[in-house]
Image (cartoon, rainbow, N blue to C red; front, side):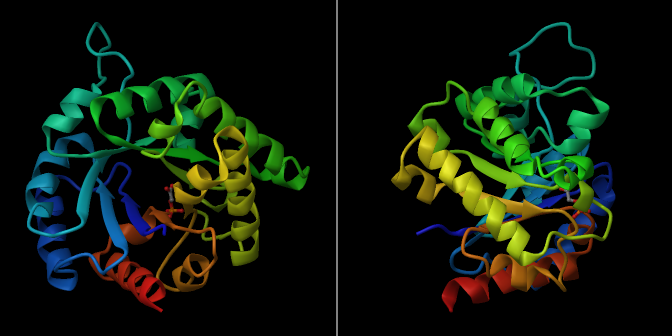
Amino acid sequence: MRTFLIAGNWKMHQNVAETKAYFNEFTKLVSKAPEGVSILLCPVYTSLHAAADAASSVDGLHIGAQNLHFEDKGAFTGEITAAMIKETGADHVIIGHSERRQYYNETDETVNKKTKKAIEAGLTPVVCVGELLEERKEDRHFDVVRSQVVKGLEGISKNDALKTVIAYEPVWAIGTGETASPEQAQEIHAFIRKELAGLYDEATAAEIRILYGGSMNAKNADELLSQEDVDGGLIGGASLKPDSFSEIVHFAGKIYSS
Ligand code: PGA
């Protein structure tokens, strides 16, 4: 039985003081993760330590980074390793977010290397896939997403795939206020699960969590999370406010126990 993962991607927001204030507020609203729900917040690198300290008092609340480098050390100015992330107390990492693919030339190949490195270091990778607006308009979204999933997971064993989370984030829905309809989300999540079954087997595919991301908020989360193959959310804007993010967490708890 899959459980929910409700994840917040803070992007380049919230310094250390703001992070501390956020957790102060959030932990009043969510003193522990509801049954069947894990919570993840992904702040900027410099706030990871403070976030991990604050999160340690809440059962089921995890901290993740937004990126990593796939090498263990070296002359890579401005980069950070998986082990360094782990050292902060974080246990997850977002990989291949569409903004990284768009602005920092990340490819399916680097996504694959980073995913392997995260697993090796004991971090749970949240691997992002999703099509551009024109790809959906041209009806190529299934092909694009299939290719991202297959290449992203290339050479990753069944055991390691089980440690991976997939996030489907249609690029046209990120930060735009436009959301995939619950039916659109379900359709492509079921498609991703079918691809995972092809790569591994049905039982493995049934266990891997597939999150939806793209303008998810306290108004639309209930319907999206109620879809059979939607196992959580990767939430940007609405995760920056403790009240809206905690509302989504509680929705997931209600859906799980209903
Ligand atoms: P959004 O961002 O919720 O602000 O659309 C989601 C994401 O980019 O992960």
